[in-house]
Image (cartoon, rainbow, N blue to C red):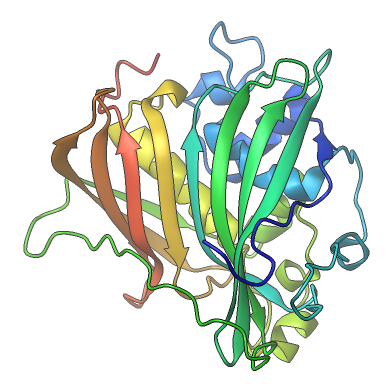
Length: 308
């Protein structure tokens, strides 16, 4: 596939985390006391929740609060306009997990490598699709690969390609969900989640959200994405991190502090050669509005009692 910016590689970036960071992430996405392998560093099966990789492009090697806007002055992509990183929201995210993350990066050299898959002009916005891999620099082992799209609000109209149509994964019609999970967010949800390293002011103070047309503060889209990943793994994968092979969802509408999120999940009965079953899911708020659509995961279905 070719087009403006396609194949452009950003500079590789070192990433690091401690066990404390893994504990914070698990707490911030709703892991429960009966999942001590995510919440207690001395548990014999202590593990980093798989989707922690989503925070690494924000955290990098920082151990303290950073200026989010200054840090997001990204490298310009050749052949496309320079987009304003202060007016960007997530579009869709898909991650394939190949290998469990170490519980910390001490003694390891781990980096993220990101390249452009496509840059599209949607008229009212531009979309940049990227592929990001988390790699052990010394061994070249790949931990995960993420495909993501970022919407640069109000920054379209430059004459670029419109982009291909996306594949949809709707939930089955007329079938009762195999599992349901409820997440009652609070006015502090985003204030806790941001401590993982995503310090975008959009999720802490109302002014940026008002400028972008959201009316005020919204919760990180990746909070909803990660909290739902936790719900799927907990309800259908026995909370075993090895039981999640793929996870993807589209960010359909903003989540506001205090929203009640309900995720419905359906097993499809379709299993791949590795024994992972395709699961469809959708997450809605208390008004029935979809906040995560196109939900699909590959899960090795397990009982709650057989976590590890």
